[in-house]
Amino acid sequence: MENLRKKLQLINQSQVIDFMAELSPDRKASLLRQIEGLDFQKIPEWVEKYVKNEDCVKIPDHFDPAPSYPARPNTAEQAKKYAEAVKIGEAVISGGRAAGFVVAGGQGTRLGFDGPKGNYPISPVENKTLFRIFAENLLAVGKKYNTTLPFYIMTSPLNDDATVAIFQAANYYGLGKENVFIFQQGTLPNFDFDGNILLSEKDQIASSPDGHGGSLLALYNSGAVADMKKRGVEVLSYWQVDNPLINAIDPLFIGLHVADKAEMSSKALLKAGPMEKVGNFCAVDGKVTVIEYSDLPDAAAHRKNDDGSLAFELGSIGIHLIDVSFIEKLNNGGDFALPLHRAVKKIPHMDKNGRRIQPEVPNGVKLETFVFDAIPLADRSVILQTLRAEEFAPVKNAAGTDSAEVTRQMMTARAAAWLEAAGAQVPRKPDGTPDCALEIAPSFALTADDLKARFNQIPKIKSGDELYLG
Image 1 (tube, rainbow, N blue to C red):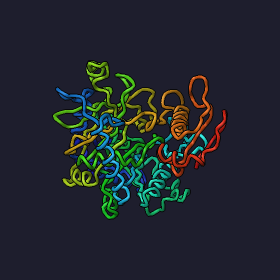
Image 2 (image 1 turned 120 degrees about the horizontal axis):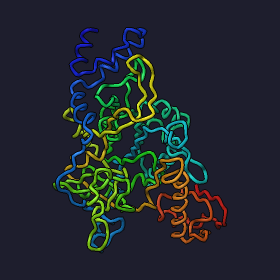
Image 3 (image 1 turned 180 degrees about the vertical axis):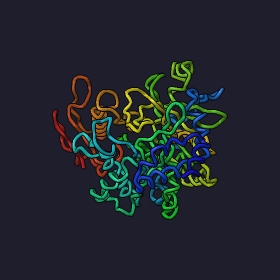
Image 4 (image 1 turned 45 degrees about the horizontal axis):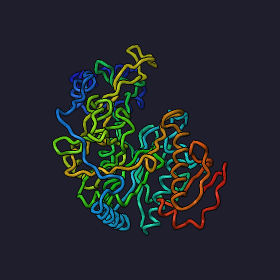
């Protein structure tokens, strides 16, 4: 024990064993395992660079708007490239070289929901959960292209057991247990403002998930990458658990990514305004880079082009394609790490007298990594613009912006647009919104074009209807 104390003293963290003498053998062993998992080499650097340093984000001296492909082709030449890209993407999918990957470590707490956010019921008619919607997407794509798409799901220590139980109870939503790979992301210790690692209990280091950037490490360490290699998967479609409008496996996006020999690519939205709370796609020394909305200088955020559009108009929405070989390359050195980001939070902890404190104001720092910080590490990167109404309706809050109510409205609105494009009549309110609830199962149509082929199966829609096409 004395050796351990000396080792901890060298990094100024001996307080984590202050209550060791009070612990039972089992609890003592648990704490020792947690301590062994600490990165003794990096913790001092984290404390100085991120915990004690409030201004730890360094913005490049010079950056430009990043180039992108538009959501729809603008020229005949571009239309030809998009058509060729779709064929390439379809070949990748039908050849079993694509897979789905959702980062799902969050709980539904902000939604007033007890359990993993992925189990939150969200669809407007059938009340399907996010997990079910994603699984049905992959099943439908597999059926359309006569292939099997494995589903990789990253959980956190908070919800891993619950997520596994949900998939078991649902019989893996028809995907087959062998095609669902659930694994945990890593964690990082929490610190007080002086750089001391906090204890959440006398035998428990206060820690939190290491952010969605931790996926690139966890995919490798969990054996998920090895599983992909065995299956012949080359391209991983990445999305976040709160977005039920996700086009999980997009042939155009995959085709552009492969045709341009990109290693990590992204979808982007045109921002609703200069200060929208999304990351900003920029170009730094020829590399695509994301600068967070809170870090982008106001002058840059408000800068406009000659036509009045925002110069930095592309917002990051957490939708990416990642080559499996790129994940391998990042991890091959054995010491891969993305930059850390600092978040000031209220962190429950034990005080020096062994009392559990539930702080009323922020009292410490949590550290996390962001997956978009890997983009500039790629040799090449593609950005494809998409339409908010088609692909992005995150459910984040119990009420107001990005609430479940808004998400359901957007799901119905997209279904209405698809139905009208197919030639159906959708009743609308005076304000133009659908006067009904609509839900289109992925098994019925993955795209508006798929729906056109099934027009004769669409019943007449009346005001107040709740129509489910499945």
